[in-house]
Each structure stands twice: as structure tokens, then as C-alpha cells.
Image (cartoon, rainbow, N blue to C red):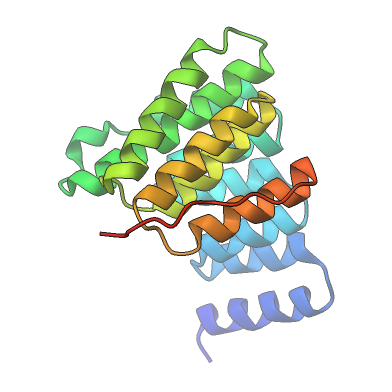
Length: 198
């Protein structure tokens, strides 16, 4: 049995025992950084989860974790500023997603620091445009982060606009997610018009 297989086995054993921090540590030794990050999140160790994401180039993910879950805007900004420029990404949809996700994380930092909400409002508008036109990859992650950012601002109008953009683009399940959000958050049912998808 190779070292990697032993680390994987140890990680699984720790996970079964609900020792998520040690499971994550072993997953890192096995080179499974994404799994390690998920396990660190389960352990509530957001800085370690962010480091695991950074190890595989997930700067936007690390920045969001540190800001939204770790409530550490200084660390989040440090990760985001250390990220390589998105210009090196060849695929335009991937580049657009990475840019939006990094800016959503930066806007979340601004909210923690009680800075102006102008940047957050601007990025939400850009997310709506990107979702409506389908010009972004990882659209579910972008949608989820935008909804969370708008909720944090208590701007339910912006939440509705994000969902509306996803519905207009014909994103699978967008109307259902919007209805579920309205029921959970506002305690009301919403009726959406039938949208002809592209």
C-alpha cells in the first residue's frame, strides 16, 4: 500500500469517527486539498480550509471562506491580493466567474468592515448581467454568493434581481430556488410568470 493510500485510509477513518480536523490533515497529505477544505469547514476551521483552497489555486473560494465564515476580512484581502491576475485564464467564462467571485469576496469584506455598500451593489448588478446572459461559468456558485451577499445587506430586492436573472437565463432550478428562498426568508409564496428559455 502506498503512502497516499495510507493517508486516504486514515482520513476516512478519522471522518467516520467525526474527527474532521484530523481527517482533513490526512487528506492534505494524500494531496486531496479540495476534500481537505470540505473537512476543515465541517470542523469549523475556516483558515485551514482557505489554505487548502489556496494550495490548488482557489483564491476566490479562500477569500470568501475567510470573509463570510471566518469573519477575517484582513486575511481574506491578503489572499485575494496574492491571487494571480485573472488575465492569464484563457477561457472567458471561467475568467468572468473568477473575477466575479473574487469581487463578491472583497465586497463581503467591505460589509464586515462597515464600508460603503456601493461596491457590493455594483458587483450584484454585474452578477445579474452575467447570469442573465449566461456569460459566466460556475454560475451556481456565483448565484449563491450573490444571494448571500445581498441577504447580508438586507437587500431582498437585490436577491430577487439575482434570482430573476437566473430565471431569465433558463438556469435549471432557478425558479424553484427563488420560491424556496421567498418561503424560508419572507414566509410567502411567490408566483413567477412562465419564462420561455433559450
